[in-house]
Image (cartoon, rainbow, N blue to C red; front, side, top):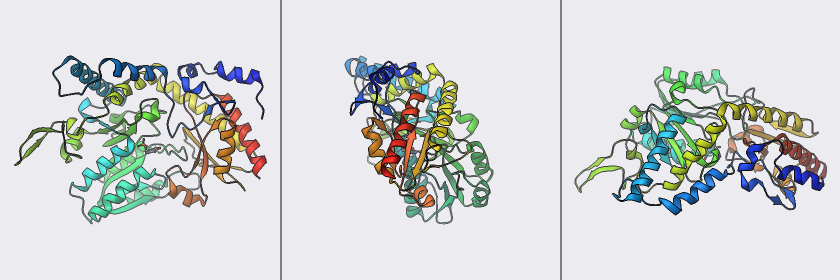
Length: 417
Ligand code: PLP
């Protein structure tokens, strides 16, 4: 598909989606073609507001927090704590003591798994995850099981990529100490019936951790309404900085669990005989955190709030249906994951072609997609495929992007099959 200069202009003038204007990295040519960025489940591009705020932080209030009495340190501390309050409001936490800054989703899950492994779990206990978890919601629990002798139980799924809820109910017994489950699958796009999953776990006295890495940018999240015990997400997947994330934990749980790491800020007093830990949320934030990232995660959340998650969800839902219709008309293309409720990610395989080859050809057309197992190897084993081609959407994508992707895919299939 050779682009005519009018087509390029159409892209670069951002017709059809004014939000694009706020994302400078989208305004570029790749191999002489306008960039079409459909790898948003891996990481999103950043709006000017966030980019400018990063520069502003380093050119004005850069300093260490919670320690200094000087002006810059107080300014940075205020901004850091204001961000925590904004995030608490964004997810409707009871208060900001329930909001812990982490490096990202992976660290949040490791934190909870590690603290749980030192909180009375024994070889009589078990942990439940699902068959379509990201590796970062599998391996930390396997590590907990290695340490404690607890058993890992896995909720199976059907061919459409939906969890088998009757099988889940059958796994729930009094050995289960925690259910760790994604809200939205990064590979299949499936939206889990998360409230029901949480309610059922609570009925047998288990805690629940929700991996919201692929949910928080697409769906409004209310932790009080969900009643989850823990919820984790990453800033870089929601238009914010990389290396910053959030662990939400119910205050009762965060009070009960032992600290994760030891160091500065997480202590009240230290002597060689005894150390007294700091109060929440600082108990779980040892050492100098990613101060700039934490402060500017607020800027990304303000950006999302200005548009509104309901509006974002409706727009992305439309885009997802449009893309599904467009790709399923291409001979040889199989959609992987046909759950009734989906958002964000559209995975597919092509009969007779390797996903990597499709990805390379699309890249040469300026179209960025993800290929491979997407850190969900058990899903690939389930479908007996080496990987998928995954297009994932954000609020700056448009039907023009989808058209170009579908045309590119058709062309790649014709070349390879
Ligand atoms: N969980 C899910 C569902 C994900 O999609 C990802 C990243 O793709 C992660 C966890 C890990 O996130 P991070 O690498 O930001 O820690």
